[in-house]
Image (cartoon, rainbow, N blue to C red; front, side, top):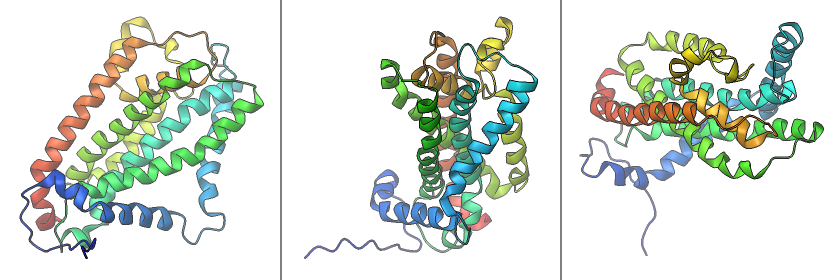
Length: 274
């Protein structure tokens, strides 16, 4: 009888790296599930924090930018405008941060056994994806409250989720690899996330950006993603901004390809440095 048991061998020679990722898929599942359990272990309300965080952030943004600053929302109820931008941003921020620290946090197994190291940051991104799916319940509830029924545009939503996932992986792989050698990045990442929140169209629409700055602004990969999310989910008269999506998609593909290449090029040194 053929055994399905996976044997993790120390010092194994990498001959078929991408096949090994599939071979070690059970380790991938284990790391992802472990992170999900540990994330809210010993908390009073557990995974409900996944719902509270975007809800409270939305309320703060609605008060500051909607009530006080009175930013335009292009005929979209302002809470919907904010939340439709907040959810993809929180997914990216969480995945970027967790992937960046994933190798350092798992130094014990990395320094002792062989397995494709790419599994570690990928599993941390999956955890953020689970949180993203759960927190989407808030957006659904608010859409029901405002009687906002998605149009046929919702069929394009998987494309923008794929873009979001790719952006998180690409950026996360870069930081994960750099953080092994330069621990300064553990301090840089929170600043990048905080700064990125305010330069991404979360609390406002990208139509507020002057025409002469649109190319530079679209270099932020989250611009095209958030614009696409809103266009897919909400009843809006705004046309799809193909320009921002094209530019952001190009940046995302660049991040993903170079992130994988750089990660693979320094991967063999992780066990010695970490």
